[in-house]
Length: 90
Image (tube, rainbow, N blue to C red; front, top):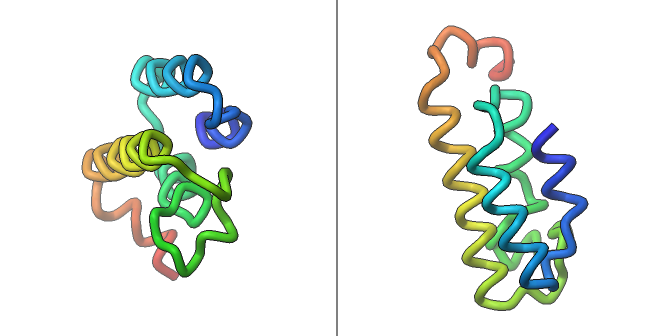
């Protein structure tokens, strides 16, 4: 699963970080179950829930990559039919 892979990345290492982002874009299309964790506090840019982040002291480059992860999740969700969201909204 893509979120588990992204959580396992050592974001402080530039080579690993770049390879992970490339692989994310090459990954098969993701569904709701995979997109939602990518929008959670794990990849958050919000200082209020900073304690949940995969990386505690994120550099500007890491924050940029987290934005890419979140944007990728949003784009994936935009392709989902609305009726599929009903199961998650309850």
